[in-house]
Length: 97
Image (cartoon, rainbow, N blue to C red):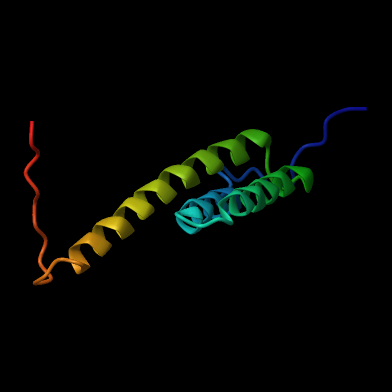
């Protein structure tokens, strides 16, 4: 009983990256957050289980997705802060020691 090779050699897994990026953005202040991450994990697992990717493809795709998700979430928060300023322009708050 040998190991089966994946059908493709696509690196990294775009499905895993997209699923985890979406999970990070959707889970922000949402009580369904754990569900989004579980769903992303299921997508990642399915890519290995169906032999579309090696586990390393999926792992790297998941890490990339998490990183892009956090960057996207930060950008969304920054845009919300800008939108909520009184005159609609960005303001830089001075840090107090």
